[in-house]
Length: 564
Image (cartoon, rainbow, N blue to C red; front, side):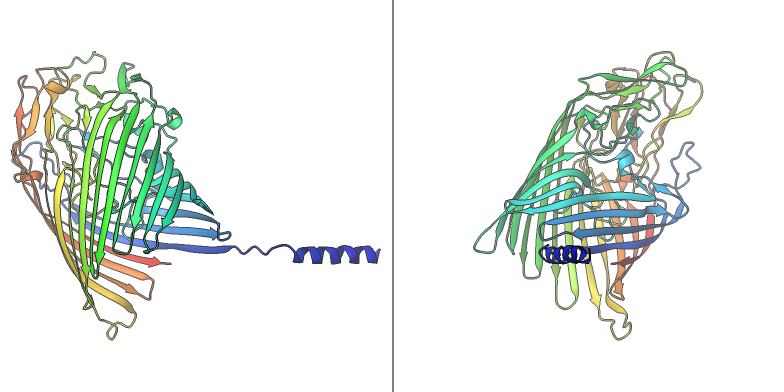
């Protein structure tokens, strides 16, 4: 018996010697970030006793927010790796448990949310894009093969400067684009050290949600079982001093072919709640970089075209001229297929010198939409993590003209019909902007031995609106000559000046891993933020909209961030 056990033991020992050793490398990166923010008059309005219905909504704001991000990485071997990213208390404001992403805002008519769903512009939104106590952002694998690399799973998506696809991985990033994606990449090296990277990808948006665009109407547009998907190609040539490439693709969805999704209001009346339809949208994004010595120049330009179905209905205009018993009174159903024509471009230049100075220059253009309820979508905007300022086009600054008058159910009672939302969106859109900034590195090793580096500097930002932000003809929109028209009084782009913002920053790295930044910005608003509109009201159904000048705003932010 002993011989049998001894023999089996020797066999297992010898056999184990022939098994190759598998070494798994585990890594962890991330940060804990805490912010303290104070801001004043972000609606750019102050209370005016001479105006009955003024739009002063926001005074002094103060809040703290936090995020704990971890990114576990497992390297099985040289060919197989697994990556993930999880946010705990994802940008949660102290005292709360959840935080919603900022929405795309439309002048006059208030808030329009365009998340992923029925072929919309942004692929991620709604429940999937809202932050919470625990947010599993990414989990994907990389497989390196002799013919190229495969990346499969939910993964960050970034291209170029990040105006169209931005992963939000920078220190002050808040959002970040992620895709449920299958990607293939291969690289062709050349003898001069350059390389050509080619790739293809297939995306399926994730949300599994009811459509929040119908919130308030109760309608539900089916989820992405209706086959919303995106395919794209990547071609990128890179060498040390120069690179150029493109990220282009096609988005497709076979919807309900114009089917009207219906809902019932509180009184049991059937109301329209969005027209479902197909989407066929294409996009092309070109990026280039040139570097020489201490100078770097970068450019990115993106175009979106084709047809899109938003499935959007707006229950926001209950004018008294509508009969209270009519079906869908005051509701606008946008077409099943809307044309898309969006162009965005950004240019950046920077220089870094041995004596501690560094400068940067940024300029760009993002098309807007002077008639946001029309059948053509021309407003998309840069991704929110592509920032040009502390406040401008990152915070939803400004106030739109508020319209008051009788409603379909109460013609004799003055009510707020529409408006009150910010005049600009929180994404950079309808803007031609210019910024110039400078930072200087200070040698503080003797005075502060714990400091790795310390920089102080500032940025000046200004912008104009190429199109009107407010230019709505309700009579044309609803085919009713009795309804009013509201339009900005400005006639040229230079009259539509957003204003001048000046930001100052002091940032440092302590103990090799503690990043801190103190930022402060002041905005001197231009005419574009004033309430100054012409009103044509043949039916005399709304109250006059008085002019009101915008007021100065400021914001301060302190960031403490432990990186690992």
